[in-house]
Image (cartoon, rainbow, N blue to C red; front, side, top):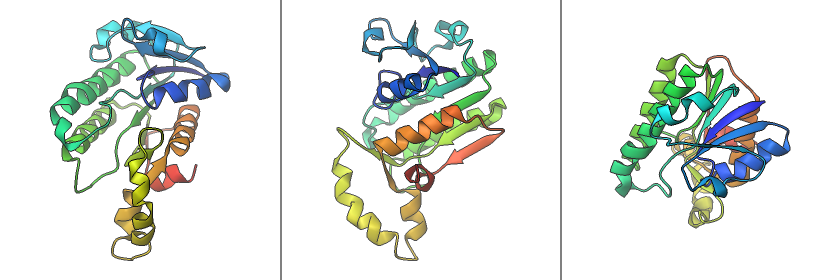
Length: 212
């Protein structure tokens, strides 16, 4: 497959690209000027700005799958302005560029919702989901709550609480919807999403991510 990917130097992107290329897929990754050297090997670098589709739309083909991974690092409730300036704008520009390039399958990492915290982050991610739906593209939307991995380990302390809450009828549904996923689970889910085009919109919730 030919895959175009944004956020290739980020937490997920730099780990996902080698998995895709090892499986024989051609990956073209968007990078800012000067950041292309941070991309994993065996992928084609396209210099451009994820916040401006005009800088990369002409470089998307021959890809048929677009994976959108751009986002603010280490999201927190204090980063509302950054979410709108980066996550929302990059999502909007990527959707528009993908439509213009005739992309057949769009893969987007959103967030589990509803939730009692991170309201600005959730609002931005759900707004991008709406843009994807309105575009008419086939898309797979992943909705993790928190990805456990290197540099993201403190929530491991919450695992016993999640285990307990998932066994109480009153909290079981919410605990599963906002369940934690591991980095390997997330990467396997992204690989499967990229390799498995869908018809319409497919939503992948945390419980399905953990099954990978």
